Image 1 (cartoon, one colour):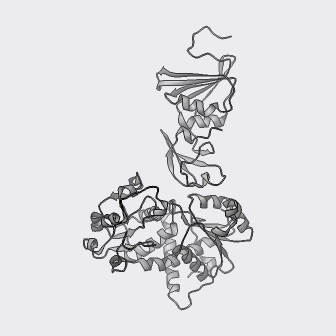
Image 2 (cartoon, helix red, strand yellow):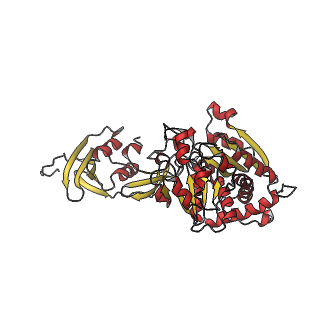
Image 3 (cartoon, chains in turn red, brown):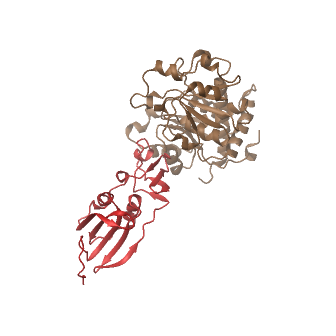
Length: 153
Length: 317
């Protein structure tokens, strides 16, 4: 049963809560995960946070996010926390780890890179974690990860 | 020369770039290049080191020196040489590079020398083919054999590069030669400097451990060798300087400017040269230039690369 505590964003019965997204990156995370997603989504922006100053949060009703989606979040909001909810209770807390190698997910910013010309998956090596910087395995160009580099499929 | 079966092995299996190579590999290539250069000075310039080996030259960008140099090196080593003309290939009919390369490899080839406008194309081929891949230039990324021949030419005159200053002048931002040279020279302890208009110097190049100056006269005074680079107009988007005349006034190497240089300064140019733009006739044909030495060393060093890498034919990737 739901408790009677008042929430600024609705509690969800089942699904995923992504919390502690440093503002203003909440909408970028939302855009990343919202494609082909028909579940009810609640978004809260600019909450006060002891850990990240101002934070955003997103709640997906009825959707459990995948490992691939967790990796995507790691690239733009590694500080975020992910809670999986069932019967209004947190049944799993996921830590976000930035992977050392990223296969697919992001595209190379170098328009001349072979990955933007031939049909091959991108591979990146993470060279810095704050902010996340990656080096393309193929053209060896290094870039800070921006939301528009991330594959939204 | 060592016999083929006795040859020392490089740590690399393919030559994709200088970045990531170790000094020992470069030293072995240079040493082997010297041996091949001696052979090139004999009446019979041919050895049977690659007899029975098939090398395909795939050039997707224009090339004169590099293409002829590789073909010459392959023929001097007695390899069977096939030249692939991209302009008349199935790539023009929509075939992917991987499919084209796999089809060629199915004809039992052993090594691929490729120039391509796309950085990473060589690494993709390496991951999809069993042949040995040699990078003959990929976009503005790397041109490893040019760096090796430049290094060989400099070391012939300056055997110990530690602490010596080598300056790359000109269009650094679009130059694969500059990138490969920087990696190679730093492995040998040289102080590397780049000089040119701010619009042609890559942002953050200092992070590669390179000094930057925009003052050509200062660069000339403190350099032991200078590698003069062509303006890569074919890679420019928009205008990076007002005019070729202005470029020449500020960045062109002239005998008058060279009067401030050390007496034994070396002038290199990877070609093709634009006389009257980045280099004057007097300098291009003068006492300090080693430009034709670079061309000869190109054949010798490419023979060395082909010869040493051929040890990996049929081996693991």
